Length: 291
Ligand SMILES: [Ca+2]
Ligand SMILES: [Ca+2]
Image (cartoon, rainbow, N blue to C red):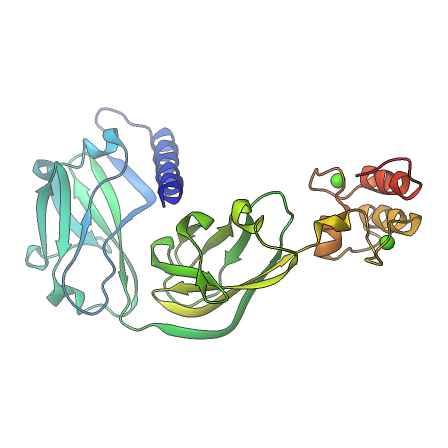
């Protein structure tokens, strides 16, 4: 849990830092946090939803104070004050959208701006009253054994967000929140399963289920190669000159190796298949070298 929070907080800080450095903070300029959104609680069809404006940056937070609040806007139109409440919680501003207003939104993701004297901060509202079920949506990858295994998730017509992932499971067993990281913008993003977790799995093909609040049925198919296959490009169980030849041809783009063979044949672990891998494999086949 702690690790994933740290990851997302550092990501936010990174975004904030980049934004500050690109927008420039001058005495009179207004700071606009483009592509940065704090999420309201998910509206699931009843009740009010709130967001506490904590940008994880003392500097930004110093502009987000109740006395300096001007208005809330949606698509550049001011939201009528009867539709929301604004309050102070431990020196942070809290904005609550009222249910009568929320009921006017269909399922989707909506973007607001909280306008303060010195800063405009983006707010994101997920309205999810029905969970969609998709079928045959499988994202595939082959693990390289060296880092986390990432999956780009896109082409799904429902709101997706890192904060909308309820859980990821393998054969019905939920992964710990430390076992993956995720980042989404709009309806696409990525999920990466950590190396530490994958190191616990033997070679094979695994299907992970990603359960979003908004969508059920998205699957991640990950192949974990047998990393003892080192150098065996043709998968016949032995390392021979034929493997070296295949790797050399692959490095010259004359041949295409499978993802699994690619993971096996990057014997010098530099993430590319080239002639030095072929050379090492040739030497290994002649017992002049071992991996
Ligand atoms: Ca072979
Ligand atoms: Ca290599």
